[in-house]
Length: 257
Image 1 (cartoon, helix red, strand yellow):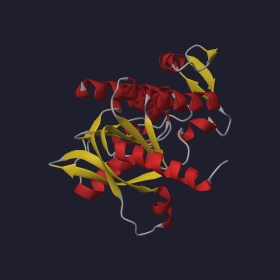
Image 2: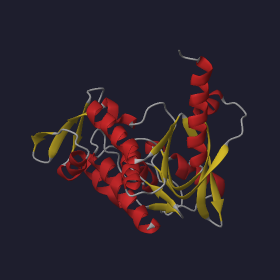
Image 3: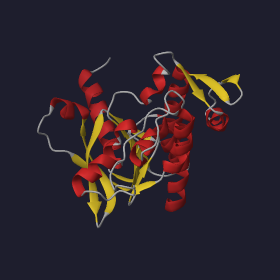
Image 4: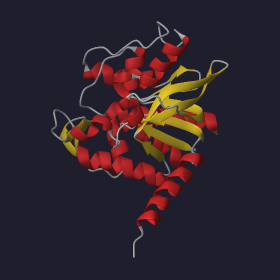
């Protein structure tokens, strides 16, 4: 016999316990696209206490839809190694061009990352950051529904030793920092430079270079990195996203261990 109140209590209690346990983290990742998921996977796999906060219901960003809703993605040879590690099937199209089913790829990334220990909080938006002595020390979160409805509801805080901005084109966390304290990012202008027009080759080369510290204890990851440092967008090629996530994870593992 099922009791609706016991079902409700089970949801509330287990979620509350999970949230309370993740209010003090080694790494908080903001944005659940492919770069953020891969970053979270490698961190969790190395026993780093990490949680990912995603505004939407589902993770995966634009990877689900491939290009113009044709649900295939393209990666280059170097990034194929990451898909191989996740046991995601790929098909050789031409030299250095591999395709993968976007639904299989995205769902597998999500599954493997959470099974590795990444904690995910979807439907959560980051509206502010915590800064102490010019160091990022955490994020300020609220429900996405509160943000969308423009309700006057106060947020709560999550403390983290490091924050990863994986919010894609919008570079949301980096933009919050500049709005709050001015031109202090590690860019030419001190602010988010903004992404340049589509140029896949240039964008893919730049993304690993740009996946680095933006502000003390704040790191850019994925397309956000090119938006912050002013490089080209890549379009429906996802190799740089995957490699970026792995690079930032490796950087933070070294710092934390």
